[in-house]
Amino acid sequence: MIGAGAVGENAADRVVQGGLTAVLVEAELVGGECSYWACMPSKALLRPGTALHGAQAVPGASEAVTGTLDAAAVLKGRDSFTSHWQDTNQVEWVEGAGIELIRGRARITGERAVKVAGLDGDDYALTARHAVVLANGSTPSQPPVDGLSEVEYWGTREATSAKEVPKRLGVLGGGVAGTELAQAFARLGSAVTLVARSGLLRNFPAEAAELVAAGLRADGVELRVDTKTRSVHRNSDGSLTLSLDGGDTVTVDKLLVSTGRRPALDGLGLESVGLSASDGKPLAIRTDPTGLVAEAAGNGDGPWLYAVGDAAGKALLTHQGKYEARATGAAIAARAKGELRGEPEPWSRYAQTADEHAIPNVVFTDPELANVGRSLEQARKDGYNASSVELPIAVAGSSLHAKNYEGWAQLVVDEDRKVLLGATFAGPDVAELLHAATIAVVGEVPLDRLWHAVPSYPTISEVWLRLLEKYGL
Image 1: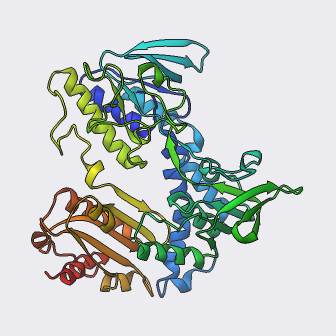
Image 2: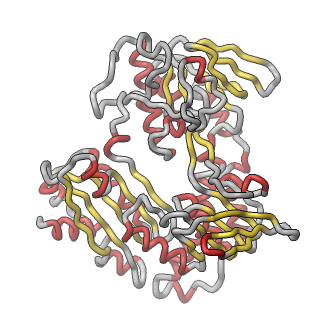
Image 3: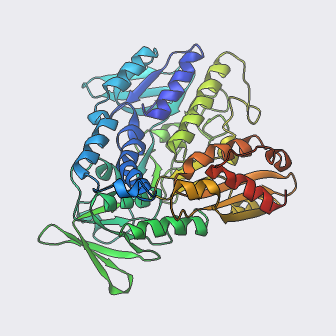
């Protein structure tokens, strides 16, 4: 396994459980991006502000709230969630699971062959009996902004591991990471300006994204959407000035660039097995439902090269990568025993079928945005006879949850089969509504049966009943 993040760990664990041996190769911290620089530290930065705002939105509790966030305490709490950027506990888990760990940088040198430049100065030549798995994650993409490569700026790693809160923070990018960190630092005391070349959270329904935008504005974030950053330069006092479309400028003390990521496939030696980039574009690979890499030399005769998680480029989400890793690890073990030949059946334990139908995603801003499956536009593009039903979240549970609660919900329906293709929720604490929707999409629960799933009263989940009633049930 090349990469010992959460995805590589899960693949290795499933392989070992299947009776094989596994080696993890990792050049950085065991546990990977999510544990130290992404999911965990970013949510640790966001949660205190959300908890404080939640208390301020409830009569009786709001009168008891007399202070503001303690930024130093928030950063200290964040440090504990990252284990102070030490991977001792993760290494202990790896060893306890019976997995070998080599610290170093791996490079494929041929079919089933991997050379590792060890961090200890030694080189290691590994030959896989059954499989090599790419689980080495993704790398940030740098936008084409004049002067950006000549200045020092934050990526998401530097932002989530920051030791102090900048007075003025600029954020380039209106995706999930950009919006989350913009709000986190605004609530910690930064004056934040977010610049996005296109709309905010443009992969989500506009009604849902606008609720998040309103939440950011309420926290003082200045939003410059549909605005291109033309250049950036460093001033004599160390600050940075961004030149925007229309001649506007923004001066900040720190700049966070969060404009997307791409699979980290450079330097892995994939050209040695027939995989290379073309037309000057970064290398991208295709995988089958087990994670098997298409067009890799030898994979047709005896499956051996797999890719999971961000490296596979399908869904750059930790939970989805772990799901892929579990399916791939099980498939490798089954093929080694002769129990699996060719492609597995959809929805079997060896197939990553949910990647095609039910990817759940949460934006942990305040309000939250959560969705799973297809949007209405995507469903129709994919050939489904799809319709949608949407309404504001305005039920007894939401009114009790917070004063002036604002939320929005949508279901996307396959009209031919009368099952859900997707769902979106926006509002305070809606992330916990998402798994019910994920189960409904994966299970293809008929709507007339779903109507019998009675939501407890008074909870925000009552919105399910209201959506189904509006649909006509």
